[in-house]
Length: 170
Image 1 (cartoon, rainbow, N blue to C red):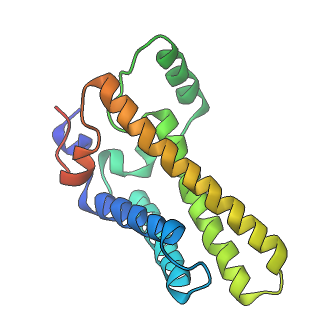
Image 2: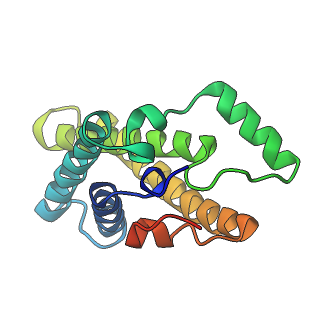
């Protein structure tokens, strides 16, 4: 794999850390009834949309979505590798890829359920959905952090560093 192919580009890194920060602020700091909560939700959805558009167009290597699709066969093979104590992939593995797509879907659903709370009369079902999705997002963020730290330890590479500086793993 070439250096260019293995590097996270600036758009991916900026979107990743911006979404991470805004999700944490909305989950733990903001008043859920406040306008800042609402606007951060819209910004997060816009950033995820930007990442998807970038990933379908100008992105290269692992940043392009064609190289970043969760496939059942890849997930099954990866689970078998984990059971055997093997961790051959650096960067997003098939389970990580599935997790990322799941988080993107959850973030869009959070935005639309939150929007619906402000602009429709479906308060009770949307409030329940929004709260369940928020808890699911908390769990996914926690699992994401644990998985990155655990795999970093297993493969003896800091998987966080390339998402900060954009340099490929050695």
